[in-house]
Length: 361
Image (cartoon, rainbow, N blue to C red):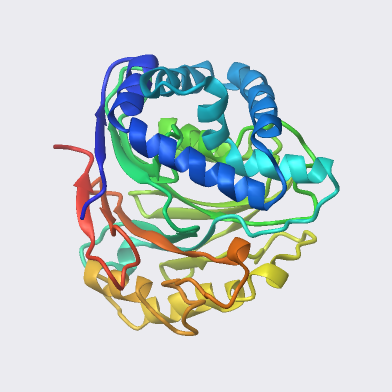
């Protein structure tokens, strides 16, 4: 089974409308799954929709084009703006609402293990980035291939109903993958750009300066880790807190990261929820270093590693954990920046093969 592919052209509203019309059923499924998850955490639909409307109003001036595309998704799917906005800001919105009720993090956000490989370590001289995206079961995702006049063309994979994407590459050879982080300062700054808008800012970038500015140009509502890379042998890991950043660079052509801070000195309780983050990135680096000339099969094999299963790089549900703590690898993605191509699994990399999705068709 392959991911659905949206070939989007025209203006932002038209792109969003096609997205909404084509995947309206999947959007409804995602919305219901998130509403159920939020109910488990103590938040009902009415309160969520009210807060979602506030987020949409606050964020629209920060990027009108992004939100015009969100409008199009709502129109095409027959959903309200508040419902589609909720999907696009669900992580930041939830953190803010928990902060407002003095709750600690009751469940982990998206967990991931990510990497960058520079040309000196890749068999074909390519710059390659990627990650396993670990999250709750059953969330629909799709590949969007975007050709437009209001910014660079790009291809990314993201949750259905969302505009910004999670992992992708643009026509200038700039790519991005992300990892969630957690700090006690999450929620300090309300209504700042969510990570999906920042991923879109990176894919809007014409050069690395603009890409980095998309992450570091403003304060943030939640902590997040970004690996940003360029096809010309550049990769930078940016750990972000509320108003501080730290930068990590590849060593001997390799860089790996999981869900804890390795460089930024901030207070974090991530290990209490994700003790596996302390070994996943180290394990991945060791596996990648076993090959002097990494090719796609070697990288893909490393992403399917089961050390410490089920809390492994290739993650599986631990049925002994509470429901709100269970995570699994929903897809693995490997991005060739020179080729502008995503290689994606439909489920865990141990269970499905990598399919190729090029920007150019």
